[in-house]
Length: 227
Figure 1 (cartoon, rainbow, N blue to C red):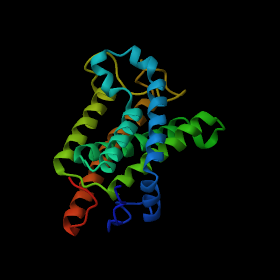
Figure 2: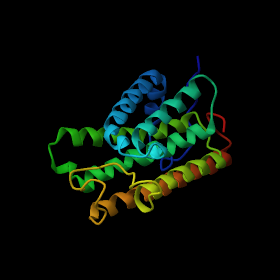
Figure 3: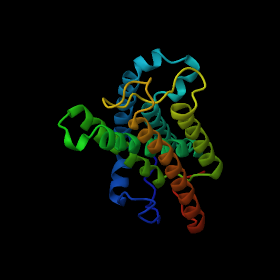
Figure 4: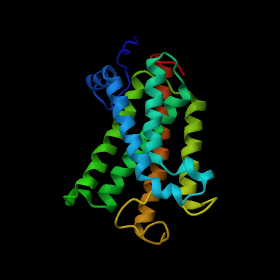
C-alpha cells in the first residue's frame, strides 16, 4: 500500500490547503476517485448535445470539466499504483485549477449565483470550487517537470484559442455557460469577453503556479513524487 507522503514545505501562496486536508484527501483516495468519476460521467452527459453538433476531430476540446476530472483520476491512480507520470500530474493540476475556478468566475460574474436561489447554479459553483481546490492535493505526491508544465500550457492555450479566438473546424468550442449568454452564435455580448478573459487568465495563472512550485521544489530539494 502506498503511504501518504510527508507534508511539503511549500509556502501557503503556492499550497493553500492545510496539511490535514491534503492528508485526509489522500487517505480517502478511492473516495475522491469515485467522486471524480461521478463528476466525469455527469460532465459528459452535460456536453452530450454540444458534442453531437461538434465535428468529431474537435471533441477533445469540448468537454473541459469532465476531461479535467478524468485527468485527476489518472493522476491519483498513477500515484497509488507507484507509476507516477509527471505529465499527467501537470495536466491534472492545470486543468482542475483552471476549469474549476473558471466555472466559479462564470457563476459569480455572469450568472449571479450569489444572488440567486437556483440550486443547479449553486451545485455548479460548489462542485467546481472543489475541483479547483483538489488540484492542490496533487502537490503532496507529485513533482512537475518543466516539459510537463510546457505541455499543459500548450494544450490549454490551444484550447482557449479554439474556444474563444479562432475556431479551426466548425464554431467556437466553449461551454454554453449560462442563461445570460445566447448559445454559441452571438459573441458580441459582454459575457463572451468575460468568459474568454477568465479562461485565458486562468491558463496563465495555473501555468505560473506550476512553474513556481517546480522552482521551489528544486530549491528546497523536497518532493513527494517523481517528475
